[in-house]
Amino acid sequence: MKNKISSIKILLTSIIGAVLSFSSGYLGWKMQLLIVFNIYFIIGLSVFNKNNNFKKNLLIQVFLTLPFFILYGINAISKSYYHIYPIVFIPILSILFIFSIKSIFKYKVALTTSIIISLLCYIGMANWLSYSLGRTITSYNYLPEFKVVTSKNKPFKFDDNKIYLLNVWSTACAPCIEKFPDYEQLANRYKKDSIIEIVTLSLPLTKDYEKSLKFTKKYSFKALLATQDESWQKLQTNKVPLYIVIGKNQKIVYTGVLNSKWYEFYNNIHGILKKEKNTYKTELYTTALLSNINY
Image (cartoon, rainbow, N blue to C red; front, side):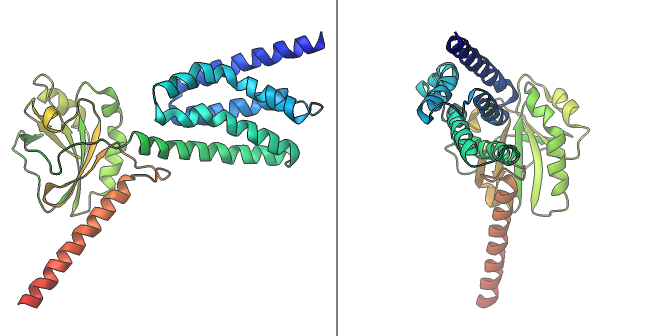
């Protein structure tokens, strides 16, 4: 009877863990990885029995993860959703962690270690997503030609001797507009930079020039508007936001997502801009040096 109750407890715990883990996806993949790790760490500890041998405890821990793997993992693997593979396999790390703390650590140390691992999970997932999803592949090496105007409806031409961070958006993209305050902070960081310029580019939907101005007028960054419907095709995108770093002579340096947080190491936008600026300065110095030599 006792064994039966114990089995029911383990089954219910595994189902609850799977439902909570699956539902945590609504908070975003970074938070989901962190939550799934802690869910299986907590429920794993709750059913761990020091009186059981190693094999039995291991089987129980594996059984706890099965419902989540069936609900989430098989779908992710069968469809090759590489970006969420860490979430699929993070329960294994939880199991390993449980066995290690039972034999080595005290609970206070275990709690501290769990917090550290959780932080590493969040940072690691942020960079994994940047690696697996962050970059947009395009066939153009230089910025395509299309008509662009300023917020005052004046023609705009990109300066060949400047570096631009271009935030491509549309008025139908709510997440784009929600991120404008963060983009404003980014623009303020570079507002005194004579080489780097932070701008936005609204792609047209249905003659929504006035509508796009309504969203950008309260910000200090330069707001540009593409006037041709073909600009979507020329930029080879059907989704926004898209972030483009344009280097000297309008060469495309980067296209993808905006990684600007301190823990986003892979394709960090500050690193990309800094590298391009250093390259630009080196070219100017070399050109000046050669001109003096020839003179």
